[in-house]
Length: 75
Image (tube, rainbow, N blue to C red; front, side, top):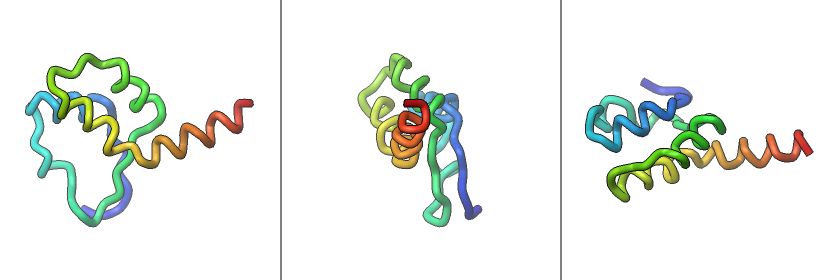
């Protein structure tokens, strides 16, 4: 697969629990991001391991930029 993929917070939670396998979703030819809403949902989730919490911070590089753009448009 190649292109752009928008991940839902459920995917992040399931990856952190081991219910899904990383290889099923990620490859080097695809750009991944979270929506601002999914990013906010993962911030409020009680992850069982530090690794799970890290998933919500390493993936949304674009979400942070989208969040800042949204803040500017609202203000």
